[in-house]
Image (cartoon, rainbow, N blue to C red; front, side, top):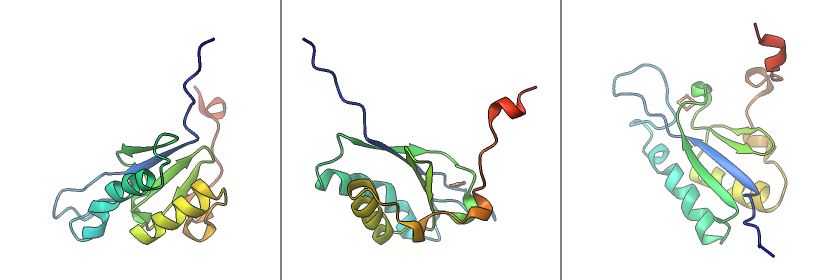
Length: 125
Ligand code: FES
């Protein structure tokens, strides 16, 4: 019998978009916010230290289109968008959501900027 390789329990998509200096548009990784440059590494290290990196896969992505709310990251499954991230918030998200199973509602994006999805079948030409 072949033992299967388990799929990850979670993927965490961390926006790593960085706007060029002088660009007025905000970005999730910014020269004006030194902590923003360390968040992905902090996330990966936290998952490693907790021994869960094999089942929780951190992914670096480009812009997730919620730049005004950055730094952001999306947790799947669940379609949970976390905003205004800091190291302290990432620690709590890993402990309470990823390990504990409870979404950290106070760090979740506001409903006004995260409405219900439009199904592709409703948009297709
Ligand atoms: S730069 Fe991160 S969401 Fe756009």
